[in-house]
Image 1 (cartoon, helix red, strand yellow):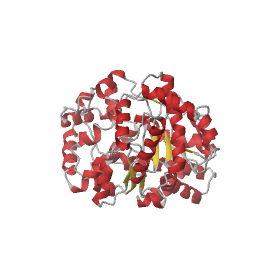
Image 2 (tube, one colour):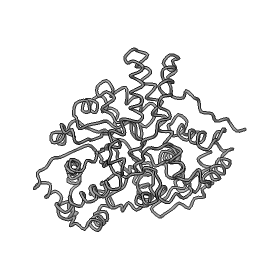
Image 3 (tube, helix red, strand yellow):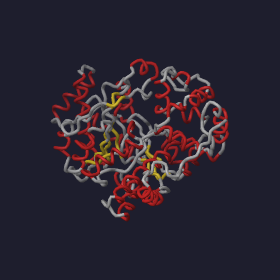
Length: 478
């Protein structure tokens, strides 16, 4: 017999009755605010073509490494889960892949994925029974039927989710054709891009040579000269800004920065493009390019984001067979105080430039990140990210950063997801956790309730718009 699915109204709110009462009131004031999603990895082709999503597997399972990494950890092969490989699209039967997820859905108990998916199942698709082996086909067929209707096309869901702005992430070699199509369509959904130059900065990336060549073709610059290479970045950044970009995004292995002289930087670049470089020189080039990107941001206004601390593609075999972003990225210990010193010596006191820092190393919150952001005007703290995008991760973030950096040296919440349907669930989780944290401060007489109401609204909506310059006339016009 199928087990009931019902979302508790007080989920994630504090258990203590008095604190929960305050949290309920705070949450009521922010739960229906529009969603601002300034950094993510959804596919702009969805909104350009507005074609129906194919089925539950292709939409919910196959693109979501949070899901298939758990199944893989239990010995279930990606070949059977609908995940594409280097050989092309998966040949797995979508229904059979969904049945595998359903049989193993108990593996996700206690994880944020379990809460996100149940939110999607109950709130979006209206299910009142849980996903398991007995309901797998019912789920698959019901989701498929609804996806075939106009109400579940990408643009309709975008509007239903009350998304104020959604940023995708593209590289310098992307032509942004889908963003052009969106703009030409007359649809009012605000989908913008973000400039992620990693593919032409990370010389150790397997596609670096091809990306550099495409970079040259798109810009017409001699990118094998230092001046031409920098000019190409400026040209692409300008184009991205014309497509609504207000930020750049940098996914480096660590937070190291350098501030070399022009002569030294040009000499280093010559080694990089020659291919005759050592690993330490590839790292030095990434470090120097953060400084170069900051120089450009002073001119064009793009907000910088730095996402360091992931050992990408740790599973060598999986990377060889399936490529990047297949759930094998592992957090590493990350230094910020020493690593950012050259950058902060150059730009730390700038008020016209903003660098949003993320981390996968929670030990750095109170020791490094909060003190840095609590001092340098240039720095803001991004929310608990990736592996820590969870109720406990969000609580730890607030507990360890607030006393030193406050709330207003953080940037609210961003969902950083490829899973489009999970966006409302992720924002709802963040709003509930933040309201619970604020309610405790009120109950302990560390903050007045009217102040907590203002902070809750800022964390849910206002700070993120301000941090990513989405409240400015140019961004609104774009």
